[in-house]
Amino acid sequence: MDFVKESCEDFVTVLASKAPVPGGGGASALVGAIGAALGNMVASLTVGKKKYADVEEHMYWLKEKTDKLQEELLKLVGRDAEVFEPLSRAYGMPKDTEAEKAEKDRVMEAALRDACSVPMEIMHRCCEAIDLHKEFAEKGSALAVSDAGVGVAFCKAALQGASLNVFINTKAMKDKAYADKINREARSLLTKYEKIADEIYNDVFVELIKE
Image (cartoon, rainbow, N blue to C red; front, side, top):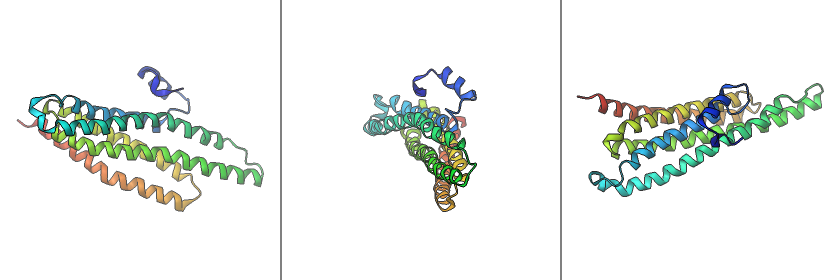
């Protein structure tokens, strides 16, 4: 199933079921794409306005970058499902003999690495989107600044959601050195970009509630 081609209703229905995919990783990618799109909407509402003529060229540049991010995040919805299926099968492999245990361990380790790679990519794309939201919030139409705030909140949620899908897979790895490397990278992204996202959101919040 191409999940991003389904209706929102169908996606949510399957997500709520016992079907193995989509799961938290795919949902995070979709939320990230929606968050990026909200920033893109700010740019769309900014270009063509005389008041923002001085930033119009830059807004078109931001839109081009965000278009690419949206496309990549939507592809990652399906990619997350693709890498989970081999892992799901690996969990069911027999382990009655030493040879079977060794083979299961080998297959599991490879599947876990693949299953980690997609949520890590989702995290990186969400970080890029958060950086763009800073510009949408600061330079975009004031009439759409709330959408920049909502968008960055979505991207932060997607970043955090993807990180949990990284950590649950590294936790099962036997190669602890590799797992630690991936965990450090994920924690570094969280430490930096949760703060940036919060700052952008709070700036929007303060702007909207001030008298």
